[in-house]
Image (cartoon, rainbow, N blue to C red):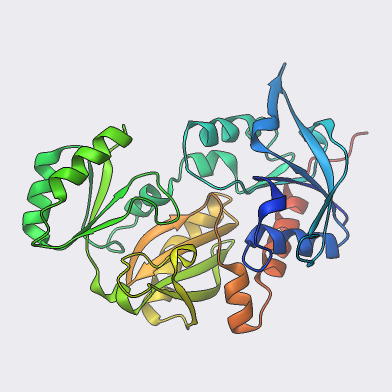
Amino acid sequence: MSLAVAIQMDPIEGIDIDADSTFVLALEAQARGHALFHYLPQHLALRNGRVFAWVRPLTVRRVRGGHAVLGGPELMDLATMDVILMRQDPPFDMAYITATHLLEHIHPDTLVVNDPVQVRNAPEKLLVTHFEGLMPPTLITADRRQIVEFRKEYGDIILKPLFGNGGAGVFHIGPQDENLNALLELFTQLYREPIIIQQYVPEVRNGDKRIILVDGVPAGAVNRVPAEGEARSNLHVGGRAEKTELSTRDREICDAIGPTLRERGLIFVGIDVIGGFLTEINVTSPTGVQEINRLDDIRIEARIWDAIELRRATTAPPPSA
């Protein structure tokens, strides 16, 4: 089938074509004969119940400095699209949430990946709390007294913003660290939401495993090893990508969450596993596809598009009489 595919993302001109997962999704869609269009999240509009955006025809190629060719903008009713990939980067703020509300008007007749309602209901650090026994000891609160008690119990902890992304604002507080109160003051100034506090898992020094699930089934994994002197393993802050295999525990975690992801229409998901603990379920704009592809000589984007095309075939409205 040939589909009209709109990609809602940040400016495509500045992406790293050797790391960006959306780029390989676009390449795969183009190779399958799908027509590509690009628009920015701020160009969405809801008018009289119809969702519009200034879209531009898109052609992609793996050429540095010339990876995206964009046509002229046209105001288009997004209900005329077959598929929309919601791929702008977090943070998961009110602008992001508003975009899910707007796209809800056209889904599933136009298939939005991932399902905008379920994306809205599945913040990365909150969805994981619904699966008992998978997380490290965790506290989510804005109450300083409970945070202090949690630290007394576990000693070595991690603090991070509840709706942060990419490792931003993640702090490791050791048992003797005197910066807890200052950090709580800073978090209070920066965020209105509760924060998330977890027992530090020392196995992170051996790596934070990113596992990609496609329609609830694991498709590949990469181990991200933090740089010396760094508590975060994210690749863009210096983490090193290493080849890895799924352990028995990894598969148990995937089996536990897979059916829920599939039922919710969360086709493309990235989870983070440290020392056998599930720490996040990333549904907004998961990354890691290209790193896994290179290390394992596979093409995860093909599996993602197989799943999208199958879901589209089963949700498409019947042809008009």
